[in-house]
Image 1: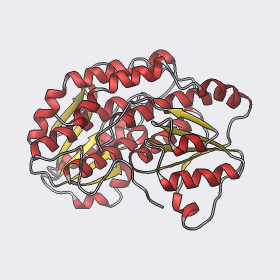
Image 2 (image 1 turned 90 degrees about the horizontal axis):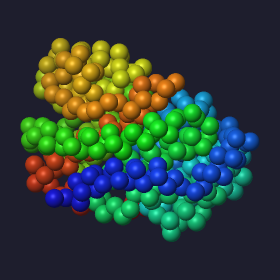
Image 3 (image 1 turned 180 degrees about the horizontal axis):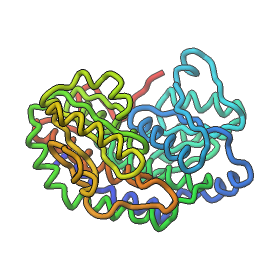
Amino acid sequence: MSLMLDEIRQQPQVLQGILANPPPALVHLRKRFSKNPPTVIVIVARGTSNNAGLFARYLFEITLGIPTFLAAPSISTLYRRQAVPSSALVMGVSQSGESTDINAYMKVAKGTGALTLGITNEAGSTLAALVDEVLLTQAGTESSVAATKTYTAQLMTLYCLAQALGSKLPDDALKKIPGAVRTQLDHEADVEQLAQDYLEMSHAIVIGRGLNFSNSFEFALKLMETNYVVAAAFSAANFAHGPIAMVEEGFPVFVFTPPGPTSIETGKLVTRLAASCVDTIGIGPAGVLADLPCAHRIELHGPTPLAPGYPADVLTPICSIVPAQLFAAHLAAVKGLDPDHPRMLSKVTHTM
């Protein structure tokens, strides 16, 4: 068994641990934000952490109404420019806390007077020592190069941060997520069986929208780094604006299909793809998938966690990515690849 699979299976405990013992900094951050909320949030990250940052953009803008942007680190590190107002909250997101360009960006941001916050899995990291406040994701050691539990730990930590910033996401709704993830893991055999059918897959498209847009990038990344599949991620809207021309009969297109505001337009796209005999694989709850002409289905089992007053998909991203992680891990096994040690990759990547 790969380390990747073992770490995927650890996620219910990791998520439960975050909710049972949230990062201590959240207590005084909540007090600070209640008196002086940021006017804008800037997030700097790379790789899987950047995908978590993309999720944060949707989460913060939908539940808080605070403009949120993903920074381009090279503007600071290579072009020597910085455009961060002192009223901003600047967040560095890094599993290791040792990404060179992220830390360089955060150092400059701190010099502008902006509040700097690090989200990392490593208490002794450079990022943790550099920023004003740190939120540790408490995922435990992640040995596989392919990040899984650290991604969902980042998402859960971002939910907790949203609460500190003033969102009304209810604790009881968040507490249902670890159990929902456990339910997905109980049906791992279904995903493993589906992976057998894609032994020869060399290319794929992954579609997501809204709060699950980040998952499309994260799943595509997992397919690329663990299976060497040429995979591209798109929103359903952008895909229809040109890239759809590349797909044809039998072309694999994975589509995240949560309930909520994105479901109607995503359903229209799936129907359009099916009409051209594209190999669409829907990832979503049975109630949504039942109405879609998908060639294959990765069903999310159990009730969808809901947060009253918010869109129906607001708590779906963590549950949705887990079967996608499982698919990537089992496909690697089918292909005879080692997802823990992909070629040309290491756990910490240094770029400027």
